[in-house]
Amino acid sequence: MSSLREITEYVDALLEVQRFADYCPNGLQVEGRRELRTLISGVTASQALLDAAVAAGADAVLVHHGYFWRGESPVLTGMKRRRIKTLLDNDISLLAYHLPLDAHPLYGNNATLARELGFRIGGVVGSGPAKDILFYGELPKAMPAFELREWVAVRLGGKPLLIEASDRPVKSVAWCTGGAQGYIDEAARLGVDAYLSGEISEQTTHSARENGVHFIAAGHHLTERYGVAALGSHLAEKFGIAHQFIDIDNPA
Image (cartoon, rainbow, N blue to C red; front, top):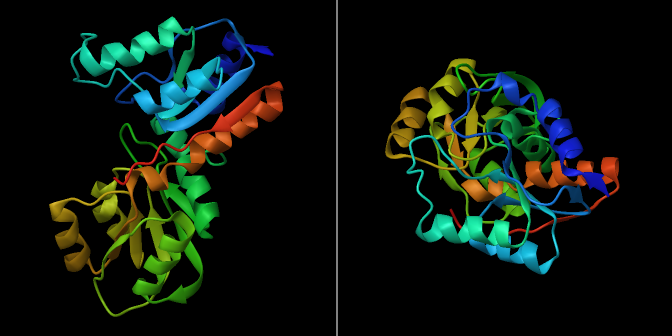
């Protein structure tokens, strides 16, 4: 058992949350009981995850996608009221880390995705609020773009969408998990053969084709399952608490 404050302060420092001008508050978003024995982690603080956390007797929930996003209505009605009420009625804390979790070189979404896919990290770039968030590197061996898509499908599941931009094989690659398709132009400036993210937009196809960069959309949820699970496991080991990652299926 450890204190909620001790764990929160540790994660805030570990992920260097103060470096990021994010779109939501990072850290403790909803305060529950002071002591923490059982931690549940998941990608998004959906009602399904909260219900699973209640059933598991959780003291805290750790997620990548939490609440209180910039520009959203502040009123607690409907779905948001039900979610907050579930946390408060059960005295469960909610900790959420967005861009800081994307960027962390060991427990972050991009670093853990690289380990899952066997990508060799060569460096990181990024500017503005999303510092150090676009990773780039190489595959263990060159392969055609369609083979890379199949490799991603086997490792992550789902049905990755591939935009083939040329006949050249893929050796160098850039990636950023989640809804980061907008970084394809920056990836092109790096000179990589392919760019992988979670989602695709209409303009992504044109950028890929016109810049000659293969593009793979592997799923927002599927690409962001690994960071929060790795962070939760680290906290369990460091603080002697129980941890379980619960994967709430999401095809997006």
